[in-house]
Image 1 (cartoon, rainbow, N blue to C red):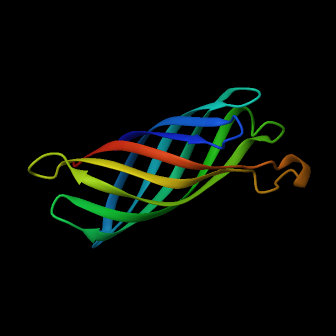
Image 2 (image 1 turned 30 degrees about the horizontal axis):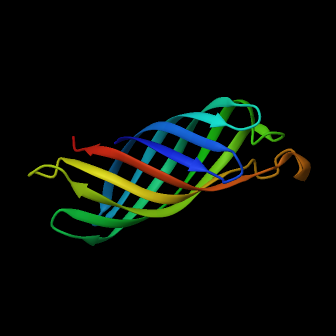
Length: 148
């Protein structure tokens, strides 16, 4: 999958990424995978970052052309500056949300994926409470899935 995420916390901070993801179904309707992303972080001191995440999806509804899923995951982020401002350059990125896939061709080998998830960035107090500002925002994402 290749896609993008956009998250705005409604206080002037916006995080956006380009990501690539590889997943596989380990049992019916349940997939697990990894994601790599490059981030642009727009905050008081703008910066860039990279992240890697474990992604899990349960497709609880399978239609003829589409599926609906719930998603959970956990990621690690390394940034060139502190994220959020006054935090640290290393952060955790848990996620929880849902979305859908939609078949774009007759074989199902190309699908649109889109959804909404909880976008969270914090360092889990690894440098104490004072250096642990967090960011929470709705994260909208979309991409194209290709079967290999």
